[in-house]
Length: 434
Image (tube, rainbow, N blue to C red; front, side, top):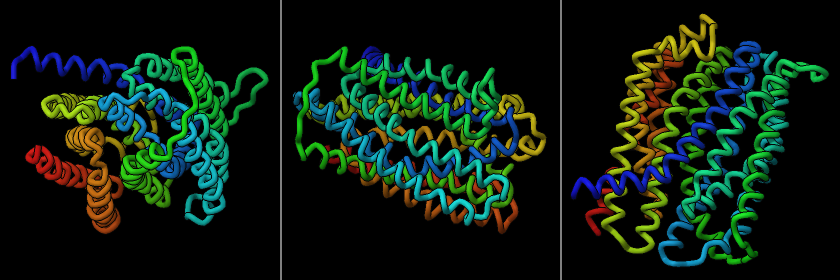
């Protein structure tokens, strides 16, 4: 393999991944804005949205995972020279159907909150946040489906610039609605939920207008498209659900001990998610390029995009791990001045650094699996790693050994290693057969 060819593959991956990195970081920074504003408002506000967001995210994960199948499937269709603009309206219908399911599920979960053992003063704000979030799922579903649709065409700049803009929009709205401004009263947790509601619909309708202006679109109905989306997307969705529930169940379990642990888990997850967005964007680029190569039966490109993209992802996470271990106190201080949160979060930063390296590897391997439409292994690997290794081991270390939140993060580190091993073995068999 010549150096020039390596540069060309890197360039092609970055052409897609670069804007996605900006957009993904923007999307996470929207959440970071919530965390910072909540932390500045009060520790109770921080704890309440940490628990509520954990539950809402777990429920919405199924819809997000299913919608994530749009991009790799349409990329394969492009490789087969199929016209894919016809799938615009079916993609939206598919996303909004699952958004409706998510909304109903969130509303149905609200009455269960008082029975889950949380501190009494947190129950009402948790329920308020969830109620408003239920109605924001449609804006989120519209945005995600259109972003995936455009990504299949490798149109990634505008959707991700939009996300960056919404970081600032969300932060301004958070400050206004949480602390109050002029005639608008201070609304705390409710203000955070209202801000997210407005931003999600703004993003969805802006992308809808963009698509209408850029493309000639027509309605099309093909049952096989929905079946293929489910075939690829259901394992992806369940895999993401397995992972999300594992991460967010930690916030819920520790939140029953004390709200400050839920806040600490939210803080640490926010940090790892920010850095994770870079390999996640590379993984999306891998899925698009590998999907196109798979559809056109170009195994040479498929193999090179897989290996080079994975190397890029792991290299970035190694750099991120070095930063996290070098400046842990400074990084945590960005989010909180609470001494108890500092005491809990700082030791976990070093576990987090090791976790990140393997997390960067596994998401790249997952992108390859999406591109070749082998998504069942992603579900199997996630279930094995998180529910047969991470949660049992983390629970034991946390409550039996007494490591508390750090115990769960040792479990998550073990899960990331297992996840990588399972997918490497599967992909090795696939590449040998080609």
